[in-house]
Structures are given as C-alpha cells and as structure tokens.
Image (cartoon, rainbow, N blue to C red; front, top):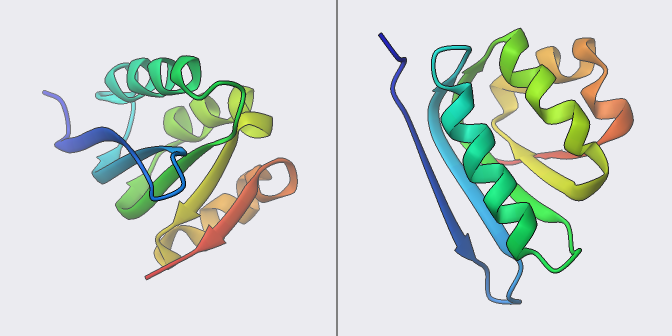
Length: 101
C-alpha cells in the first residue's frame, strides 16, 4: 500500500515552476513524485524548479536518491525536521537547500 503523499505543480508570483509535496515520500510513492517532477522540469524552460517540501515529514533513501539526478535543476525548500537527513545524505552539498517552516 502506498504511503499518503500529495503532490501538485503550480507557478509562483515570478512565474517559476513550483512542485509542492505534503506527507511522506518513500519507495511506495516515489514513482508518482518522480513523474510530476519530470513534467515540471520539462515545463520550466531551463529555469530551476522550486521543490516545496515544507509539508514533507519523512523522506526515505529512495526519495533522496530520486532527487540527486536533478540537483542542478531544482531548489529545495525543506521542512526543518528533514535537515539532518538531507545533510547526512550529502544532498545539501550538491543542491540548493533552504529550510522553511
């Protein structure tokens, strides 16, 4: 059974593509998230996509691994509870990550 997650795509006030996710991202639902991210990247006209993970409470290794290939094309706004896992995984070394509440 897939872990509940909600993923949506929109544009911010400056016209940048934003992917917003809430819930938990893990191997049971990462394919849906990855598909949404791929579509958002295709719509972004080469601009970085903003990933709004302020509503994500948990990421497993599958979710982290899904982010690495896109490190140069996304800007992550993360829930502060994810700070440790993002740092330990090395994602903060290759991707723009900021925390927001």
